Length: 317
Figure 1: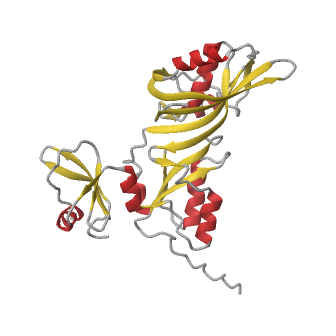
Figure 2: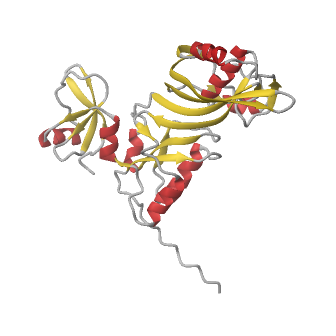
């Protein structure tokens, strides 16, 4: 009679039920979902989510919430982002980046720095931008990239975005013998929803030679930077060594991401039990922090109430 293999003991999660944020320095080739799945395995919990996707080609800052901190992700004010990127002028692709099929090649070596700077200025500030056709924007319930890859003609409407900084750090002229390209290393600071691929495409179009993105690294999302981040290898090594695997515990994450209102223990008790506080005339979402420095709730004022939009530490926890 065959014997059953012993049931594998389920190990407890590596972080407590409150959790926190894990800022990952994503490697190229990984989807945001891949990173979430890997971290679920490392941290031994299904309660991991991400705020703001990052293309597989891109590297850099990806914000993950773990355990209860997953509920913070929808409230994080991640409206500004920063990137370093490389734009190739002289070549267009189907996807506006290096992963797509080349659709046109035009010599670009004649372009002057002044011409490039002039066109970059036109793409700086409050602009209307048509997203890349392989974006994750939904059209009638289906992602644009899925329609494009199925061979459909995808037309996306222009949308307002803000490019607060678009600066050339270095220029490299490349002569292949048959044509010439110009590679630009740039830094971009922009609003959420801005596509750096689309900036590369539009800069190339304005200069009459086409353009696409060959490298992209996100250096900041809201208040979270590469200084907070660690690679998946570092996360795995920390977990294996019994070191804290998170970048910020839930209290530090809340204090980093939101304005703070200091409250008394009595007020903390009210919030933990679902009651509200008197308003103090503050706009937007802010954090209520008790005398011990613990995040109790995220509050938003309306009329005569400062009410919780998320209780970080409810009375039953």
